Image (tube, rainbow, N blue to C red; front, side):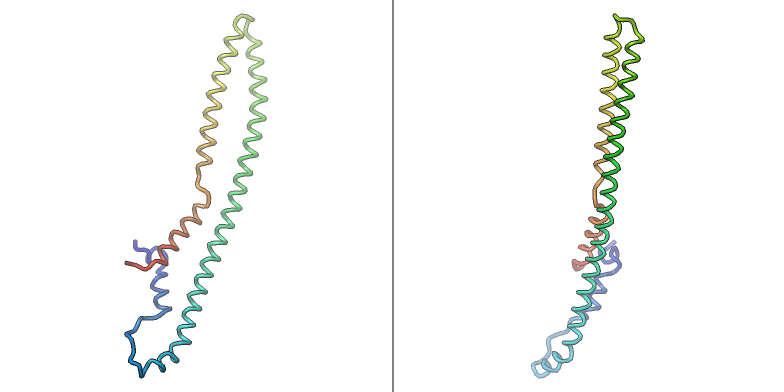
Length: 157
């Protein structure tokens, strides 16, 4: 797919707004052509500027929406992590204490070591999950749209 096809044929539209290029006129016709094409050229430049401003506005709105989503996502992650840490710590403390007390005095140290190994493995798995969750690219849609815009604004080869 060419850049013009991927961006809704923006380049041909810009070419149509600006108009076709013409061969240079002779000196006798230059003054008359300048007077006739000046309003058209200003209108074309104004249209290009309007389209560029509209495109920038759309991208800014997309960025604002994604920024809000990222804020909510971060707050959600922090609240879930804090709650999980607090509740998990209480549960593990009580469970560990109960398990250790169930065994005879001579075997309690082995039970405590087994629990430490189990909890350490579980903590490593949770850290890996948190890292995987934080690897999601922020503002991915904004970046994709800006790449498409860049492709649209560069002339086709």
